Image 1 (cartoon, rainbow, N blue to C red):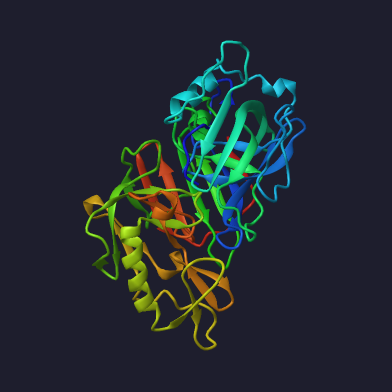
Image 2 (cartoon, helix red, strand yellow):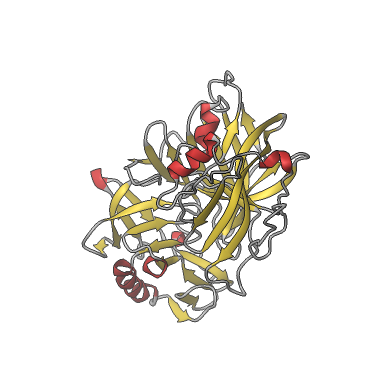
Length: 400
């Protein structure tokens, strides 16, 4: 999900963290048909479970919310609404948290009315929806026996731009993992919960559900096989800089474009000047083994010929995409990183035309491309890394 920044703040007393402090959460979800990967967090007094869409493309953390004055206009299929009490609504417009929100939001910034106190309102526009709400504070359980007070968004008005009858039910909210002054992970570090501002996720592929998310100094990263690229300055987003896209070694478009990693985006987006020639070339390559077919899931789909178990052999030497960054850094994408099984013998292209949603000058790497891949956002060393991995979930673990 592409968005400006709010974030999630923790109000914590300084603590003395252990030498390698981290939290590791299991994830649930998939690219299709769910369209998201969620982490379950217990929030409120008493603690209640909420499934939050993990989003490295945004610092916005908010829950679908029933506001005592503004009510709620929730996303389709919401299962749980957070209901703040009077004590939770005391994050006022002149509060430092609201000031940080205004500093991180580009363009229009919420203004404080003359009459104080006044709740800190925000309105955020994503590629596919908008959300409006106020900042609140409440308790979150970070791990067994460790509860803290946080500031997050009470999203009382969510509206899809292009609602669809096949839209999967919405999550209970969003966990913003992007960079920024009020970022979730940055605040965890600033208040001593973790020692390092590092995030990683491993999203399960099409035959599995879930995966895992870690926050902090996770000490089980692979010692070999990781490709690292320096983070480039590109707003508050995780970007290794510009890259050119190649198919089987052939460059698709002459110019490089900025690349952003965004776990809140279900699919990968490329501008139309890349998308059209890419689709044409893929159709020619995939047509040797697959037949084009219409499917409601996505614009470009294929059906397997014969009775071979669906798409197990698509990782052949042809149809390999590569993103080539500066300093000879390469990200290799096999067909399993862009072909999404939607039925037993049908798969669809998980790369969409970004120009259709206003993304004309950048490449957004979404969940479809990051399946069965460990991706690490290392804000300590200013780098982003990736490696192929079979992603499976596990119980919540922590070292705090």
